[in-house]
Image (cartoon, rainbow, N blue to C red; front, side):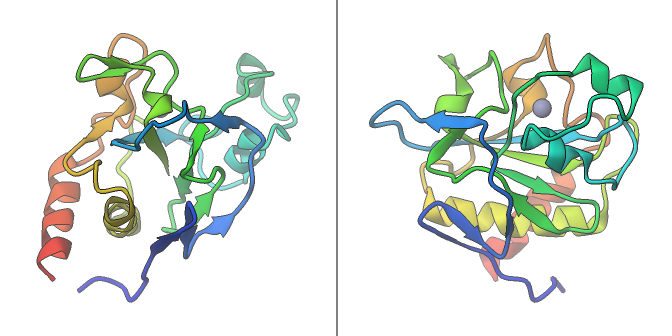
Length: 190
Ligand SMILES: [Zn+2]
């Protein structure tokens, strides 16, 4: 049984997500259709959860002096459309119709610049710990809502490591693609 949370996309906003606007976005190239979903993981500091540092980072409000790791990412301006916390809470930083800065140099099915045509979802997590049950449930629900609004996505769901293989490892070996795909299949039957 899944939780009674329901998500829907209206005017590029995910109803059911907490809105935390990030300045790190720009326009998608004119006429670009959203046709890919990219799954990531992030934690700040790495492998530590909670603390609100990811939210601050995506808003360019992170105090770089708080932790030595933060100095290695000082000045970076990045974002994702969504962040799913360990609790399953969903935060939205960038309107889906805008271009978030999550993929970097990347390509999917030989088409470069994934930021132009994708939606990026960050899971609060890392490459060496399991994700939470709540995160899988919510990720599946959010994915269904996004695919309903942007049907060109269809089966085109990739990890950051798939679109930038020599640079990126996330969502990492602990992300259970089978669990995620089984939840998606279950929801599309219901
Ligand atoms: Zn990533």
